[in-house]
Amino acid sequence: MWRVLLQRSGEKTSIGEFWQSQLTYAGWGFPTWALVAAIAGIVVTYQSRDAARRDVLCLACGVPVIYAVALRNGAHLHSFWNFAAVAAIAIGTAAAVDAVLKRSKSAAVRRVLAGAALVVLVLGPSIEPDVDRRWSEDGIAAGEIVSAVGRDDRGILVWPAIGEPAAWLDYYGGAPHRTLADHEVQAAAAEDPQRPVLIWRRAIDERAAGYSFDQLSEVATARRGDYLLVPVAQIAAALGPQTSAARGN
Image: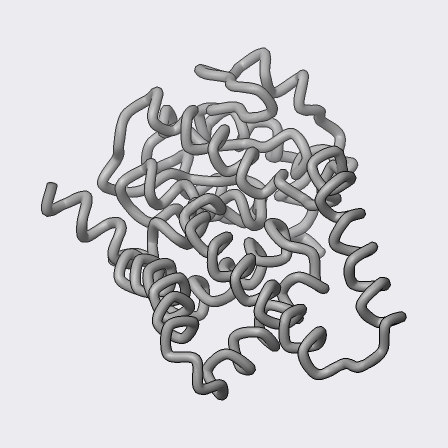
């Protein structure tokens, strides 16, 4: 339990990584107008004299903030971690609408807000959010294949660079991952020819090199979705002529 608590509390996640992921997840989970309205509502509520509203909003905002900050690695890895923020967004948005209604003497403004609320209530559940969940999905898939071969204190090797999904490897692999450059593959193969290297289909396809993901899958020791684990010696063999040519240049 203590080990899990250390992992969840940010043992391997920097403050910068944490804030970047939280901004990304907020954009995934809520439309921009809702975030803006909620912030405005929160500000208005805290400036008001309504102690009951302030107390409710303080609780709604405080719980997800404390939960995320105290366990920042969990919040960094999982987009659902701050799901409790839904209450704060809803209350803040309602407070903003209420403030506009109280301050506006125009019947037209009231009708527009009422119509907008009705549209959101009726159509909101049927609208598929246009968000990019691939980062989480790809990260989970990468973590699963790493878990399948067990943890290695040396960390998992990655080739070529796979970008954001690599953040999940440190958690599942139990140690920081290492991305190999082409010229480092031969040295890694000499040190431990059978050491597995994680390969991602998209990273391979973007290289447009003389080998394909399907070709590498033939010598893989494990495969899950668009990920392979391939012995580093096999990658060195595939890269051999290209690496030599690059060094010559």
